[in-house]
Amino acid sequence: MFPAPYIENYYQIITTMNKSPAGEFLETFLRVFRSAFIIPDRFIINTAIMIVLVSFLFMISGCVYYKVSTKDSFDTENALGELVNERYPSKIYHRDYYTEKKLISKLFREHNFYAIDSNGRWLMESLVLSNDTIFCKSTFSPIPPDSVKSDENRKSMRYSKKREAYFTERINLYVETLNFIDSGTTYFPVSSITKYDLYSKDKGKSIVVPILLGAAIGAGTLLLMVAIFGGMNMGN
Image (cartoon, rainbow, N blue to C red):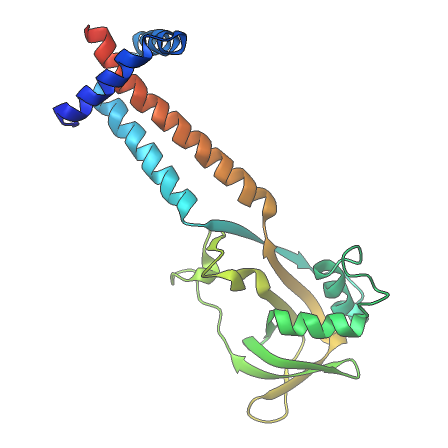
C-alpha cells in the first residue's frame, strides 16, 4: 500500500529515535502492542487511515450543533417576556438599561420568526408590537415532510457555523389563529401564543464532539505507527 521510499523514510526515523530513551520506549511499546493483538498489517493501516481522515474532515468542516427548547407552560399574556428572558438574561442585559420594550424590538430584529396555526406554517417579517398584538408580513412556508431531505429535518442537528448560522436564530410561535388584513399583512394577539420553540447552539455537544474526534485522530495515528513501525522492527 505504501511505496518503498515512503517506508524507508519511516525506518530511518525509527533508527534515529532508537538512539534515545524515548525511541527505545516507543519501540518496546509497539512490539508489545503488536504481539498482543495479531492483526493483519493491511487491515490496521486501512482502518487507521479511515479513522484519521473521517475525523479530520469532521473537524475542519466547522460544524457545530444546535438544540431546540420547547415551552408550552407560561403566562400567555407575557409570552414575549418569557422569550426575552431566555434569550437575553438579565445578568448580561441589565434591565436598568435594557427595558423589555427595547429587548422585544431586538428579539424581532435578530431572529427568524415562524407562526404555526391550523393552516400550516408562516414566515413572519417586519414584526411590530402594538397594544399586545403582533403585526407582520407573512408568507406561507410549509414544513417539509420527513421523506424529503431538508436542513430542517436533519437528525444529527449539526450545522455549519459559517453557512447556516440561521439555525440558532429561529423561533416558532404556535398560535390559535393568524388573522389576515390583506394579502400579506397579518396579526395575532400575544395571548394567543400557546407554545414556542427556541433554537440555540448546543454548547455542550459542540465542545465534546471535537474532543472525541481529536482522540480518534490520535488513536488512528497510533494504529498507523503500530502497523508500520512495529512491522519493521519485528522484521529485523
